[in-house]
Amino acid sequence: NAGVTQTPKFRVLKTGQSMTLLCAQDMNHEYMYWYRQDPGMGLRLIHYSVGEGTTAKGEVPDGYNVSRLKKQNFLLGLESAAPSQTSVYFCASNRIAGGAYEQYFGPGTRLTVT
Amino acid sequence: RKEVEQDPGPFNVPEGATVAFNCTYSNSASQSFFWYRQDCRKEPKLLMSVYSSGNEDGRFTAQLNRASQYISLLIRDSKLSDSATYLCVALTTDSWGKLQFGAGTQVVVTP
Image (cartoon, rainbow over all chains, first blue to last red; front, side, top):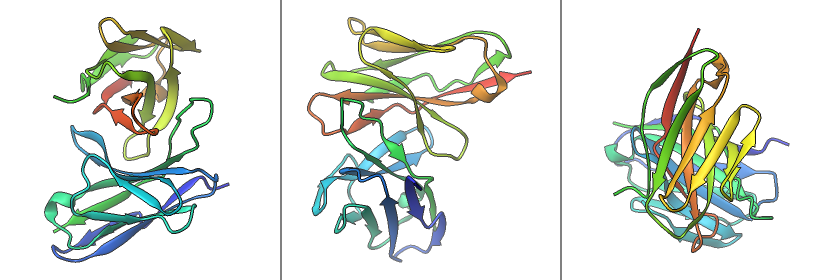
């Protein structure tokens, strides 16, 4: 049971390049989330999904797109990277059962846009 | 204004001492609260859930004051391994498991 995994762990992009971050979970969770974490800002929700085939915008969705074609995978895309997207990206998942709402996080992707 | 605010610290604590810090929230619809722990450059992990007025888990005690809209975390008998950033998190009634995270309070336990 690997929990939540993220690929890649590190990446450096030039402004204008595109990339896709992959999140996978093997816990059969319905809900998945993408966050970014910047110094002094805390975790901010980018997009989330409440089930296979569904996605919704979070707090800071501009410049990002997502897809949830399979229940276990949640992809985050940057179509044209900007230096403001330099951040640490965390994926998380949970199964809302019993009101626990515990979110399980992946190890993060450290992205630098130059 | 951030929905969840925390003193960033750092709180420098001698090993064996007690440390406590608060978190305030602005959304009165927040129904559940959590403390997550985040080690340097690692992912957050759930430390405690706070559903009613508070709860205790070993050396950790969390208290909730709904009237004043704050949550506190107290760590007794601090260990070196308690050094981390503690994230205060709130869940509102209108969300589908969407959480509001504070920016975190850094705790440094010294020998």
